[in-house]
Image 1 (tube, one colour):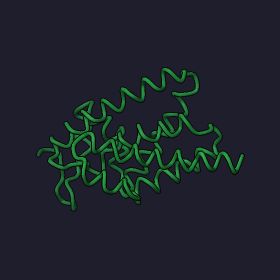
Image 2 (spheres, one colour):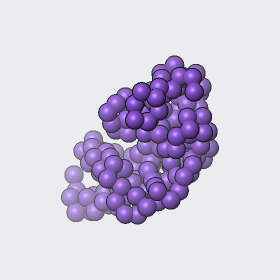
Image 3 (cartoon, helix red, strand yellow):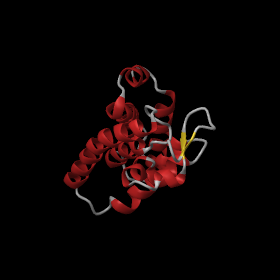
Image 4 (cartoon, rainbow, N blue to C red):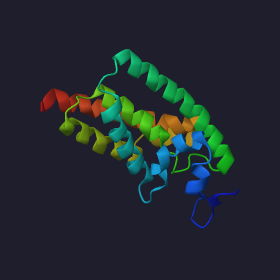
Length: 170
């Protein structure tokens, strides 16, 4: 495939290939998914940065609709990009981190400390993939599978954050 390097263990897209298609630009988090190592962490950091500037004036209804549309789009576009690359759930696809972490940021307290804790927890759960995340990740393929494991990591993060907020008021 033109624009995809196979020099590494998995195919790796070039910046030119990613930026040649608007869907790829989103799926690779405006290029943040191309940063190695830790593309998921870089994507999550960019998602957080974007959240700070976009969310303050948005209503809960607007955010909820936006996240739902981002999820639906992500399922479709992740499948499309995966097909184009011939790789399921490429590590450079970070739109799933964007959507899942935006969900977390929407539902946790907006203090910087709480967001830092949520970031650390989300990256932990997304990386370690405790049960049943690992099993879901192995079973569900395609665009839905790409999005689903990160949503489960967001759920785990929100569950722990509920305890943090309840028992450690900041």
